[in-house]
Length: 125
Image (cartoon, rainbow, N blue to C red):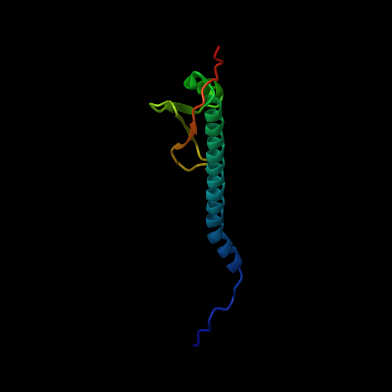
């Protein structure tokens, strides 16, 4: 008795699809999470830049930054050097990545910017 090789290929495409679909979905999820993280980082850097611009011309930089950032949910800290020449604004935010069903903890992103402190101009006289 001779055994012939099995030559029926029906269902092969279905098996390949079933094996590659989870990998494709995982790649799309990582791409979405990375994009969300990059956009949040850019938004935070823009917030730091605007807060530093506002604080650089204020008599009380910490209050100016706090009032600007009050609605955004961002933690902020303002540091003025000893000679009162440079002002550094540190901002940080905790975000949750948009991956459904994946137990990824909250990610903390931060940004800082240093600008020259100008203060409020005063008139002599």
